[in-house]
Length: 473
Image 1 (spheres, rainbow, N blue to C red):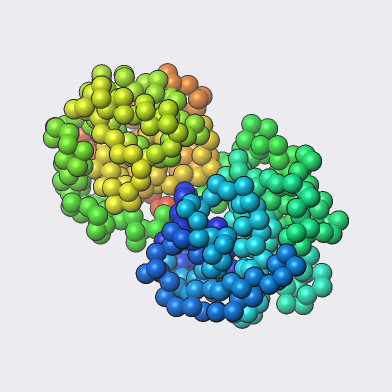
Image 2 (tube, helix red, strand yellow):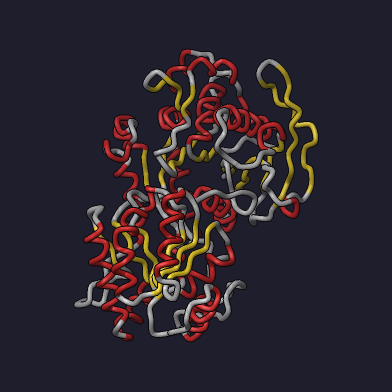
């Protein structure tokens, strides 16, 4: 089976969030289970030159807006799988990956160029795996091409929703510029008087997937469907949830090069050394019996920062360390800095993002908090489980799928989770976790339950292979 994964971002070439992690890891995992996979993603200004192995196609001439755009494609296997990066400087050599008024045009071009590229590099893929609104354009183009172009006749599309809140909206009047002038195409994009690339992908793709079983149900509700819940319910028989995986070659406490000491489920001694290293990195007193509660996230309302603000004082007064890595809205950045100023011997803050530091935090922290309003899948809770860092989460999306509440009677569960989006419920779980931390045997049992869970990409990849087969059938 030949599968082409198309994504607006993919690690290690580009990343702003979980989409990049997923798109970078899935092709490698598919290759490992015997699938002929290829990844296509843009070449951004931020893409490091060391990842661009050679120029595969110098003359990727793309018919575009009544002319020809002289793009080219680089080749790489830096992510462990064959990858083509489409280089179109006027669209992708910018200061940031997203955030421009013509983002819809940028990714409409990328989608069209990706299909042009696929026709240049070999046989048609049996599966075109499209990701989020950025790839809704390719879903429609493929559906149209299958009617008249023999090359695409047997190709089927899988459209993955990573975050329903972002829908790629723009004016219907621009559709013709991108080659979408048929009644079919205009109908696919049309949504509340505008065009939506997310809606188009949902409507015309052969099969739909999303990044956790729970999120597949949530996006069929008014609360989490963002105006498209009617469409996800309508296509529920073609919608499946597959929880994302973790690349255990990258996130493995037994081999992670970023750690001060290695450890595993059979020998946890190194985790204490990682805790010491983390406290020293944030210039905090090295009191090894005091628990560290950490958070790594974009500082946005989605991530439940409002709840953290309401209970941060109680956490500090309970005696725990609090460590935060991330950046985002100013009011949230200011909050973390004020908490640091209030309790400089208990709070550590790093504004921005550092991948090495993220690894050190996952290894050195005792607990990890993710009280998200919504979380399609989430990856940090799975990193935490792998590193023996107990997650405290809200029961939404992938957090609900991957974290099981600790049951002291039966000795089951790998973390702590609460339901209603309320600060008092969140604080209850913080206190429960701190109480469990006080009993070394209990804490060790929770850690072992989490570390023994299989959240590998190999496991997830096999489920995607099943999905691809269902799609072809």
